Length: 189
Image 1 (cartoon, one colour):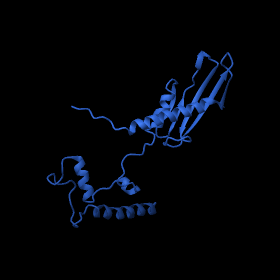
Image 2 (cartoon, helix red, strand yellow):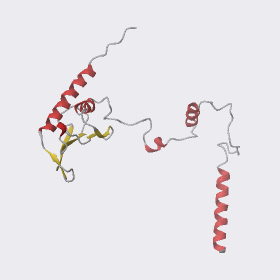
Image 3 (tube, rainbow, N blue to C red):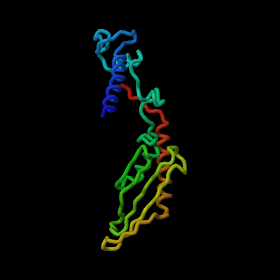
Image 4 (cartoon, rainbow, N blue to C red):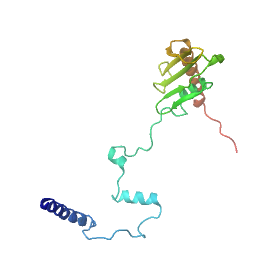
C-alpha cells in the first residue's frame, strides 16, 4: 500500500510542473487565460484565420496531408451524363437503392404486364464516368414464383435487355454531353 501511495505522489509531482510550464507565454511570463478583446476580431472566421496565421491553431486536414483541399470528389453527381441517362432509361421502374458516390443504381422488383408470378430487377454499376461501351456493368435478375407465391427462384439472366439498356443509356448520355457542350444563350434583360 505504501508503494501505491508513493507512486501516486510522484506522478502528481511530475504533472504539476508540466501544467505550470504550459501556462507561460512565448515571452516566458505567466499569463492569465483569455485575451484582449481589442486585438481579437469579432467575426469567428477572421479569428480562426488570425489564430492560424499566428500559429496558435491547427487543422486536422493539414496533419493528414490534405492541405488546401476542401470537400470531396463526386464523380457520379447528377450532372454526369451517364448517371442522368441511366436514371432516364429506367424511370418506369421503382428504385431500391441509388448511390451517387458508390456509382450504383439498383431497381426494386418490377412486374411487367401484370404477371404477378414473374418480375425483374436491374442493377447498373458505373465502372467509369466516361461515355464508352465498357463504362457500365448492367445485370438483370429474374424472379419466377409459383402461383401461391411461396417458392420463388431468382436468377441472373443473360438477355437482350441488358444490351439494349446499355445501348440506350450510352446514346442518351452522348446526347446529354452534346447539349452541355453547346454555349447557353444568355437572357437579355
